[in-house]
Length: 203
Ligand code: ADP
Ligand code: NI
Image (cartoon, rainbow, N blue to C red):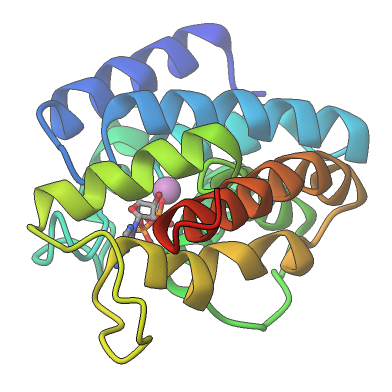
């Protein structure tokens, strides 16, 4: 059983490692994914502790932020060592972290219920109002244009909606995730349509 002390320590660890990130991977993201993952895990009958812990640690070895540790999950592993999380629980936490990081754009089904819950929770944070906010924060941090109406340039924030974010709600793995994503996905689509209409001077 993963206890509350371990969860609190993981939240503090994520806060330390992710402090100051302006590209959408801050500790606030890890905390929201943790909350979403717990809610999904409870509905799905998954191991809530494994899901919460994996959610809190899912970006501490992200390949964009920590290229040197992403293959080994060295940050997560050193935390699990320090907390004495071992055996099957440790294996499932690491597996869920890997599948969020490396399968996020893929179509491969997650290999455990816990991995499915955490992956859906991560995706939920990329859609809805929070998803809109994160996308524009990312675009600002990377000096990107808002949109290219011709569709030629794909390196814009709104092209990212078209290429990825608007498709996420369709790709959820759990029933609970699908329900939550339907509402957030509708919000995201409404935002996108309003953005395009205002851009074109239709409203
Ligand atoms: P995560 O690691 O949480 O799965 P990503 O690393 O893919 O997410 O992205 C972090 C945040 O930045 C997300 O909200 C995502 O939508 C946003 N983002 C990633 N790439 C782009 C992009 N090219 N344009 C705008 N936003 C982006
Ligand atoms: Ni994430």
